Image (cartoon, rainbow, N blue to C red; front, side, top):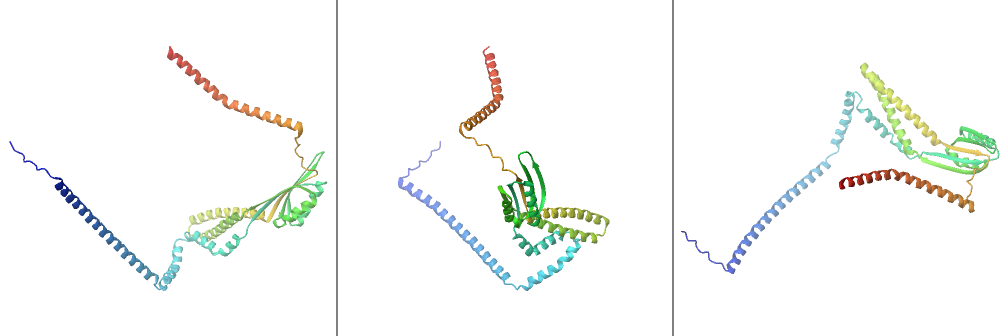
Length: 330
């Protein structure tokens, strides 16, 4: 039987000394670790600073190099580029050259971009004693102003007669046209609207220019085609591009005509437009009350019609619930 040695009891002072030694050792190890971390961080920052300074010095040296070398490189590149394009058959550089042509015509394009294109439309209602004679006079005036009459329609009955005209007047004569209508008779209604279509016009011009360049390139390819297959492919593409070009040119001419010539829809009548009957007094109040009553009944009927399917569904669900309860009771 072994006898275990007795462990002497430690005093509070001894425990405190042991605790201070252990905590002091831990604090020392932590301080050493922090010191090593700072040294590593400082070393890394120094390396980064040295690399940055070296890059700045190299960049400055490159900046102050003589420009002759770069110019010569650019010249040689510009001289050697065309043969590469010729080897490619002139197909790859077609669109790029087209865009360069557009950029070269920047003076003309910027000048056109500064011009606003406005489409003016107007409608007027004029009352005169003799609508046919007034329409003839207005048509003659429009032709004298280098305009034209696009359409004319006449109608008459026992009480009134009227003539409807669609006039195309030069856009600069809008004020003169309004004055002519006032001199013709009593202008009961007049509205003039203006729409800016400058962006649409510039878009048409750019697309037309690009297609024109493409057509010229395709024509050159057809002239240089060495095989029948290449000739047929270029001819088919050329036909499509020409069709697209003609369509765009037609749209551009239509837009330019709308800009150059304002459109006037004029109705000339022998009497004023009929005014709505005024509702006042007892009769007016009675009519208003009747209209409200009819409207309310109509709304009520629509609500009933909307709720009726839901009521039928609710009745079916209630009947099923009641039948289920009865079965459970039995």
